[in-house]
Length: 358
Image (cartoon, rainbow, N blue to C red; front, side, top):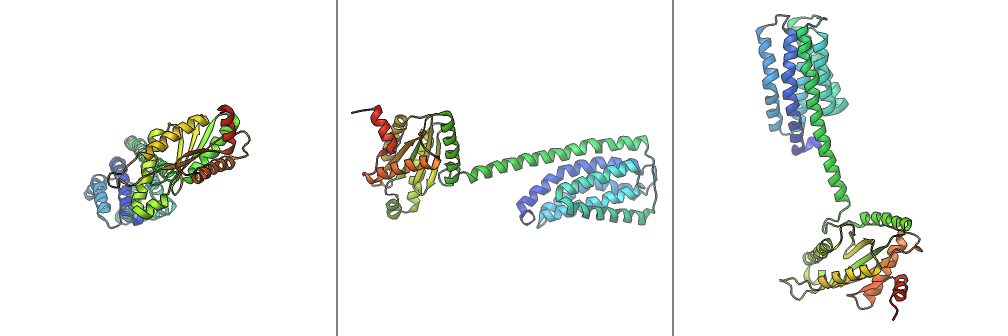
């Protein structure tokens, strides 16, 4: 949770800092105009200067140095509310500056802590007002002078803009975090390719597009030959390096609209849109040859080969699973026919024989 993490608490403290400087700075003029006709004690002016000019910086330092900055900043907001209630009563509840100050305090508390902090702020305001009445006595000033009206205008314009800017930046940051989390949820952490679930979602979309638009597309399932033996012989670190090497090669060689994913373990999956079976075969043969020529300088005896199954999107396929199953059978045939080769789905073999008769 945020209140248990000093890093996020500090971020919260920093977000409050600038609005507090602006709000208390311009609010000081509203209060000064409100009490100017009441001849307050000299120390009242000193307290007002402290509250408007020095308190924002002191509050920031107190929260920043606290063990739990988030909790400390909530205490600072309640102190703001306390002083807001104090100045409201000191101005003898002059309607315009009083409503302006109390509304801004309420907006702060709702934005920072929701309903709970809002009600705590109301109690703090009532306590502050009671303190002022105990010191100066109760009074009621219902008419605002022209000076008081003008003094409230900055508070009514500049402060909401400052709060709006902070909220906008926070919303943009949250949107960025959401985008990153969404990308992470769809990405395999080791290879950076789509993970199993994300790739299956894309397969569904691509299959529907092919069936509706009668366009070409090919699935390629890629299996690293004897990958378990590589892990058992050289260790999982080397195995991960092999997986990374293949994923990097896929990223370098595939087109921007090709969709590559890690299907699971040592098996990779591709969707090649707008691609004929022959074009897919040529691309996969090039990939197989490049991976086969890869040598690790520290392990020159390590050889890598790929078995690849291809299946084109046929109008007769009932669903994406049938398409994927056709590619899986082609991969199975490649692995059982000596590995290190590209093989085709049974329906595609018939098509190829018609297109390229002996």
